[in-house]
Structures are given as structure tokens and as C-alpha cells.
Length: 211
Image (cartoon, rainbow, N blue to C red; front, side, top):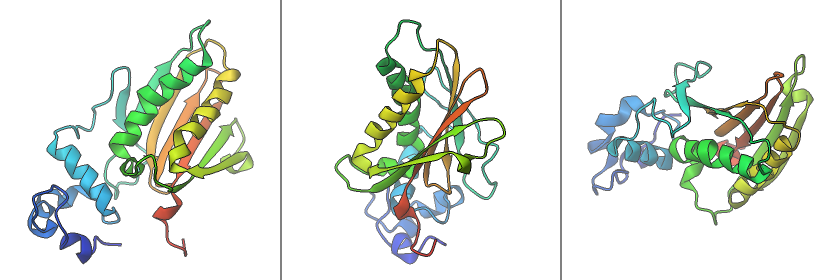
């Protein structure tokens, strides 16, 4: 699907008051996916104009790398990686907060289209939790939870609490990346034994009725 005339001839997302086609479109057309929504285009342009779209930028304690699994026809997106060791006498609440506030939430706000929604919006989301083990396929052990966007962080918070309940004080490798198919982020938590816990956030309204 190509960016339609309603976007090209609508107001430019930069706020200049001019039509997008005659304002920022020539400058950014090579950096935009043709299936992006107006809000996603606006977010990309705001990041570019603010000078914060450095591919390898990441918060302190987080490393940004190229997502090697992303299709080359799509706009490049980074994967963020953070190593985290739960304190031996720490609280699970602090562990969950570290993963959400230091890794997942900043990534969502920076790279994912769901960041355009306000907390009171009633966007449907589907959060899928998958416990991957050697020799098992993701579809063999899914657990799907439905909710509204305003409940997104509460649902993820609860899921991460369960993850840390069975963790000891070992270093975890936490990764988050954007998945085009799901229309949202995937969070992966891997322990020293190789067990992987994954959370995917799907945005049903990104797809048509026939998809």
C-alpha cells in the first residue's frame, strides 16, 4: 500500500501549515515506509527534526544494534539490548520497573506507533506471552491476554512479575525490537540456561478485516 493522496495533500506533520507533498515529503520520502500511517510519519519527522533519530542512540545501560532479522525492504530499526542482574535481596517490583522503565517504555516511545495513543484511548491490544525452550516452537506454548491500550503497562507489569518470581540472582539478557507483523514491540528475556520468555504486543487495528 502506498502513502495516499489524503496524506500527501494533507497538512504536513511538521506543523508548517503547508501540504505534506510540497513541504517535508521530498526531504523524508526515502526514509518512510509506504504503509506508515499519518501518525507514524509525524513521529518519524519529529524525531528527525529534533535530531534524536541517531540509529545507535540508546538510553544509558542499553546498547542499540542493527536488527539483522528485519527485512531489507523495511525502514531500518534497531534492537535494544540490556543486561540486568536482579539484586539478591531486591524486590520483584524493582526488577519489573527496571525492564519497563529503562528498556521497554523508552523503546516504545521512540520507535513504535502505539506511542501515538494517549492513556485514555480504547485501542485494543493483544499481549502474547511465550515461554520458549529448546526443541519447542512458539506456537506450542502461547498464552494470549487481551486488553485496552490504557492497560498495556499493567498487563506487561503483571507478566514480568511472574517471570521474576522464578528467577534467581543471575544475569538476564533483555532485548526489545519492533516487529512489522505484530505492529508493535517484542520483548525477550533470556537467562543463563537458555530459557527465553517473550512478550509480543499486537495492534489489531493495524490490519484490515481480510488480513
